[in-house]
Image 1 (spheres, helix red, strand yellow):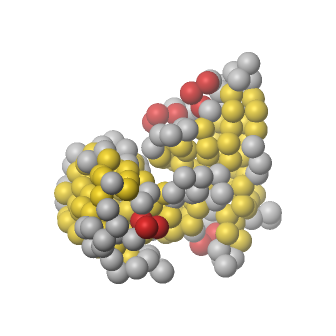
Image 2 (image 1 turned 135 degrees about the vertical axis):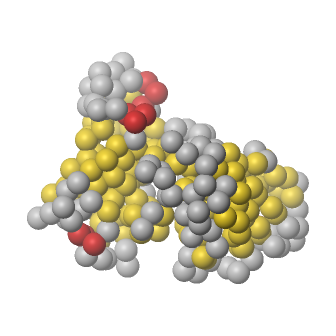
Image 3 (image 1 turned 60 degrees about the vertical axis):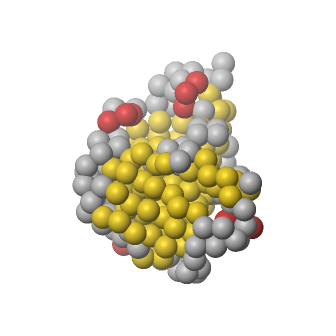
Length: 107
Length: 117
C-alpha cells in the first residue's frame, strides 16, 4: 500500500497570505494525485486531479504541482472561504490511499 | 446535475452488519465506478473498496479483509455497501464517491453509522 504523508499538520496563516501544502508518497504515483478540500460538516470536494488539473469551478489561486513522490498544493492568496482541511489522494497504485490531512487555520 | 444520494443514519450493535445504499443520478449509471470512503469523527479519510457498475467486479482494501461487500442493482441504479462484524471503531461517516479514472469528482452526503451496545 502506498502511504501518503502530508505536512504540515496545521498551517496558521492570515487571509491574503500564500499557503504551501506538501504531500509525499512512499513510492512513485507518477502524476496520479488529487487534492480535496473539506469544511466542517461537509463532504470533501475535489480541487485538483492529475497533480495539476483544477476541477470545474475551482479558482485559479489553487495550484497543484509535483510528480513521482513529491507534490505541492499552493493557494496563492488565501480567501476567507479557503480555511479548511486539505487531503491528498493517490490513484497510481493498486489501491487508493489518502494523506492524513493538513488543516489551514486563521492565524 | 450529478448527485449521489445515500441512505440515512444507522445505529447497530457490535457484531451486527449494516448495509448502506447509494443512488447516483444525473449520468449513466454503468459508465462510472463507485467507491466507498469512510471518515471517523475528527479523523482523516479511509478508502474501503470499489465496484465496477458495468460488470459488477469489486475490490476491497486489505484493511477490511472480508468484512466489506459491495454490490449493485442495475435495475435500480443503486450501489450497496455492507460491513459485517461491526465494532466500535466502525462508528464513522461512510461516503460513496464517483470514480472518475482514479479520483473522486462527486461525493454522497455521507451516512453516519453508530456502533453501540
